[in-house]
Amino acid sequence: MRIRTLRALAATAACAVAATALAACGSSGPNRGDGDSLSVWVYQDGSTVIQEEFVEKFNETSDIKLDLVQIPGDNYTDRMRTAMGSPNAPDIFFNWGGGSISDFVAEDMLIDLTPILDEDPEFKDAFIPSILDSGSVDGRYYGIPMRGVQPVILFYNKTAFAEAGVEPPATWDDLLHVIDVFIDRDTVPAVVAGADPWTELMWLEYLLDRRGGAEIFERIRNGDATGWEDPAVQWMAEAVKELVDAGTFGNNFRSVNYTADGASTFFAQGGGVMHLMGSWEYANQLSQQPEFAAEDLGFATFPTVPDGTGDPRAVVGNPTNYWSVSSSVEGERLDAALEFLRMSASDEYAQALIDNGDIPTTSGAESLLDSHANPEFARFQYDMVAEAPSFTLSWDQALPAGDAPALHDNIEKLFGGQISPDAFVAAMRNL
Image (cartoon, one colour):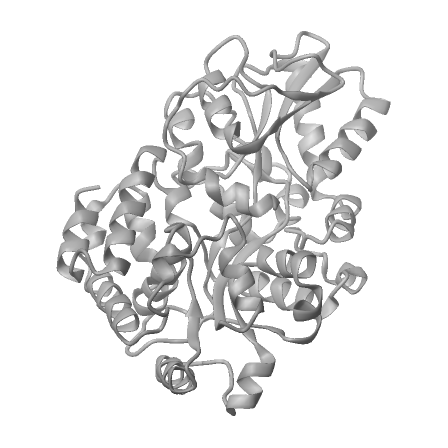
């Protein structure tokens, strides 16, 4: 499953030089392009067919050819980080924006795309603003969106909810009521894969966003560690303890995984009735449990919380993936690289994403959504993102890569009851 492997990358901190072979399209290896070519590195998954198609289209008319290098599996981040700054660095490369490229930005290794976008409003305005902004570093643009949106969504079992006489929770009180109802029915209210703590992170991200607003994590992301001392962070940690103590996630969630389909299967089989997960869960269920996806899978936004000052339309998750360009690319090669990046803003590219089951990041794609395999779900996602005042990138990808292991460890301990909310806040302050 493409997105499961994408998310698994967030837990990968080691920068070992992997020996994994590279699958190249029109290339024998990942070397930097020469004077007549540009090397383009992409994470190999189910969406790579789109990049293959558009590289081929580009090469049909350009004198400078693109050499697409597909890097399989969980080694993408390690390979990319090892190559940057070496003779084998890519000219154009796939990334997650934010913390995944911030150290490259600090070393002036990437082209600042801000003046290029400012001078070409049609190019800049082609993308949903919150998506484009989410890939920025210190307010400057170093990436152009090139994949579909991936917001975190509250999935639920429509049949189970109807039989219990409850609606998807719109408020915190609604959520606590739904939890009580399903505990009384001996059903786990919400599935969470405790063996993969990035799934628990999604609860924290929405709780903090709803309670204190997106600006708290924005402060933290920008290097202000005192953001962890905000009262909303303390409330968030205590809310998690309340949910765990109430039995929201059942008694055995710490042994449940996501990467091996454990949580999704448990959810589809009725063991749990809510699942807070990235939008890729729909495609996962459609692939693995098609009858459940067609008949029972509902979707909703995360509820509001008491005294929350955050905008209830705000979204967390993975806005998308981005193309960035090495600062070593100059002259005609840079012109060619930018021309390739502009292809991601076209209706033709948006249609290719929809045909592949993804939701485009371009601002004028509404008219294309009816051609999606599930137009209702496509429109729900698109509107959710387009109307969001902010789209907070997953913390483990927004923060410097070296912080992710400690972040996951702290979250795992909080959910497991190994540390108190106070201790969690203190630990986060010391990341």
